[in-house]
Length: 349
Ligand code: TXA
Ligand code: MG
Image 1 (tube, rainbow, N blue to C red):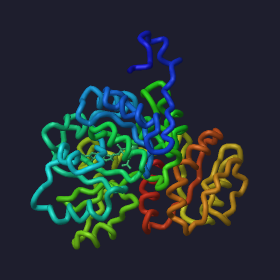
Image 2 (cartoon, rainbow, N blue to C red):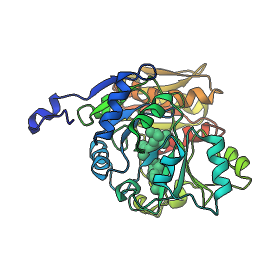
Image 3 (cartoon, protein in one colour):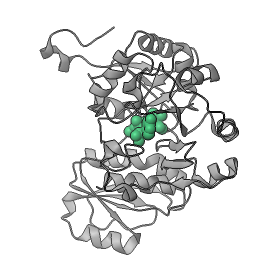
């Protein structure tokens, strides 16, 4: 199972298996599911970003996720399921929030909404970082669904990047961060949403991480107000103690320094402050890149779906060009723009 050899000196030389997801029933997906059943770590595509999966009910397998990513033990994992029986293995469905919960699952699953629910006793403490709630979601990507179904177990999966780094939206991004540190990556093409799922605490009616499922959408479905918790309100609290880790510290970050600007005039002024060779830019269509040496053409400024889908690809491509500074405009805070702003603000810390 473990393809990384015994001797420490060999570890760097032996690479992660790259499996093709192909069409339904493909050998790559079946092999990946077998690796998960045997306690291995497999990165796989979801509609949001690539996840790094392991059997959520096997604490040894879950431990491998933390060491591959360099993730601190206080940051809990999302469990991915593909049916109700699997959901009930990891979460206790609370009768009091019953109707809201049913409506949320009915409306948004499968899809980019993660629900915080009371944890079932058999979920290892490592998964929830010893918290009382477990994060669960049912992904929409057909390869993710088939993989979970074939594995037959709930799959714990954070984004498949080194801790704190930009999330991966392709199999190549996964390998750039984790080659040699995980057993396999299942290649199912580029993620279509591009930013991670909304994290929603059902009982508290609180969003801890904005995503494609917005506060307005949730509010309309449950017929009640939804509170969006912002990191700044928690500034005094250490990240490990916050309601949902991931809100406060630097996350999603490229290697270059990220500088956020509002509007075209501010962007031009910022680019002008730096030597041309040092500066890369996330450039909306029709905007001026000035003398920036590296330009990622981000798309139409009013197409928030496209801006979200290409966000991490652009940051990684500009990083690959070796620029010291990435200048990026903040999109409007509507729809998916809220999630893009959230990731950019955390990446710029
Ligand atoms: O779209 C996604 O959600 C992707 C794909 C792979 O599904 N996964 C993902 O996982 O983004 P990760 O680990 O990178 O982010 C999980 C977020 C973190 O902010 C974490 O703190 C929060 O969810 N979270 C997980 N379990 C929690 C819990 N029990 N209580 C509070 N927050 C939790
Ligand atoms: Mg992540």
